[in-house]
Length: 329
Image (tube, rainbow, N blue to C red; front, side, top):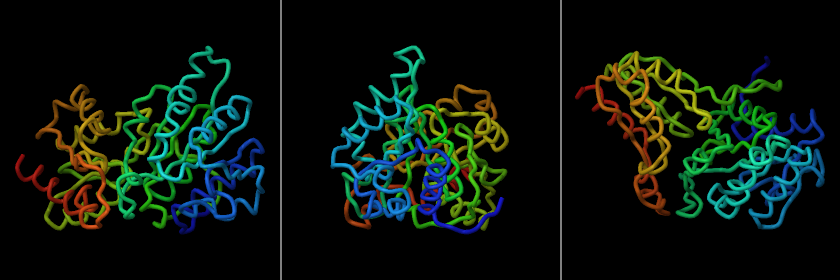
């Protein structure tokens, strides 16, 4: 494949454009995705390329947007919903949880809902408490939904194309701080398999398991840890549901120490599920130390920049907790 450097946002746009070029049933709907180009500029020029029938600007009604997408999916279309902020999915949870996730099961598999819902998530932009949440645990808890969190431009394209091709409803959570980050992305269409974590780097002293923007922060932390003589493996979960524990168990067994990093608050957070599966699985006997979670604080995300940063794990926090995990155990 021919790769070049593009941004995370450009990779998503390219995936949507290529999917629409290859399949006339693929279309996109959401607020301000037309001439405006999307709240974060992701849809860009797609409106001018494909027109208002396939890049459909909608009223400000998340319940109506997702409901229309579910209906379209049931009659053979492949809708891609863009919700401006993942927080606003709260307005559409009936359609997401009680309709999209359950219809295939409730009618005995006679129909499917090949719908993709994309939503910017996470903090770091000064958008405050109602526009900065990390709600992945909500969606991962629901049978019938697949949930992915691409942490880099390559996976942003590959996971989205896999989501569009999937016959099930897929939630794609895109961290806002990643849109302007860049990486090597193939020009051709390709799919990153849903359900497969990625071993970002190998180490011997501990494994850091992370999601979303915490993956790049863990990579930076690992560079600093190396200067202190600590070798860290890093696993990018990528797919939250379904969750394949094979790789995680292998690396936990090899290192004996695990640090689980998420932006969302610790209480009933997604990393609690991974911690439980490690404890219940084959790798717990190889643990040299208790499983450690590093998570956001149990507070709404503040508006003030200093407080916003303090509310979620930063690189220095990962370095501190990883060092303690290795040195004290």
